[in-house]
Image (cartoon, rainbow over all chains, first blue to last red; front, side, top):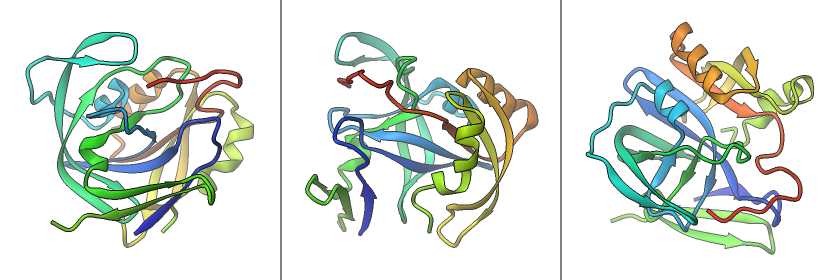
Length: 130
Length: 78
């Protein structure tokens, strides 16, 4: 199990993730988003990791809009000590005012028992062993 | 393992406020998390930072905005 701090109840729950693809590695600052079915990365981060699209365009519904997006197969994504390999991510720009590189969605979070504890201001994440 | 990588780059937050910061990761621990980084660039544009990573062919990077992820007074519904 590992623990992420909740910095404020007035902002998003953020964390660093490590991303691995071929010889490329990146540390990115993202938000945990239980409202997102997919993990989103910004086009800038996709470019840095030299990812190629692996899906045909598909529809992505956000809070205010529907966009056509592409999926990319990422070698590995790590949060805390836990790594998930061969994970699909979606390239999608975030609003300019949101200074993040992505959103960690349910396709990643669903591999964990996730406890949002707003009393101790912690997110506790324990890997589900299949 | 340093879960909060801000510890590594904190001095640059005051130096380049409200800009994107780019670091090259030079050392990692046994869990592959950065333990040492080298400052490379700063720019208000995230796209410009991505272009620098590609131009310099950096293999291991850390990118972070030096400021609030959401401007004060703003709310988010993602």
